[in-house]
Length: 318
Image (cartoon, rainbow, N blue to C red; front, side, top):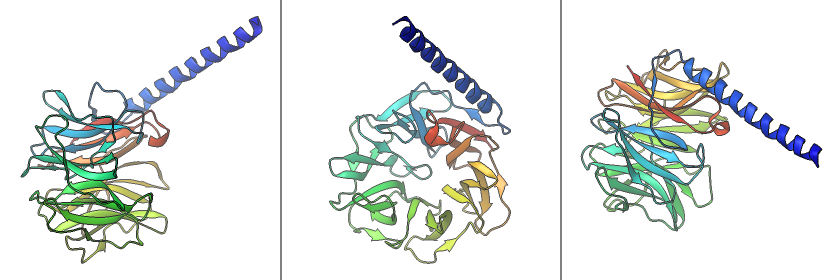
């Protein structure tokens, strides 16, 4: 019996020791950034992800996954970067997820997001100053679900990733007018796999990512689905893309054979050389840029996100 207690004691001590060493290593990696990003000290447990700026750039909205990286349930929070005030926006025990980029609209003063309810994941919006539980449902389809919505600049349309029920791949970029008068307009093909649509600031283009030959690349198209064009013609996975406000550049998360964990990069829409914006041994992704082009906000982990305890949020002044 004494030997058994000793074995248990040693196992517990070893677990604690390993945990301390792991935390110390994470702190060392976090402190070893080679850029000027600063961590937002937000007093929330879980994984903080998908940050997106308000139109005035003073506030962000983000998703908090309670049980770890991409592990539901998840809430939406608003955080004022200047005053440090934190406010719950959606906190109902369900899965509520926003997309970085154009999810917060200046015209209708609302934030658009996907939420899982009895009929699966559908698209909702909520007023930026609304109280909990005042969300408005936009989409309602018995055979399909929707993720990752963003607003058009005029606040009248959304574009989002549509899937058939119980189908994880083959995302279709879909456009829909929030008053319901347009019907569902499919902008990409059903046999493709497309994700994360974002509008340009002038409303003329939609950015999205598409998987071909086991690689994610960034594409743009007109808002009616015409004139599709691949922007990123180089090797590696490119995800989480947004336009700069002038529409001349895209900012995205990028990994390849030389970059084990993704960092944030920029490239001209017309092509050209890559510019690295974050320089980190860990992972940086899900980026959003302020409308005045002076700040980036993004999620970060010290290791592969799926193997991490969760993400934190970081701010980079450009």
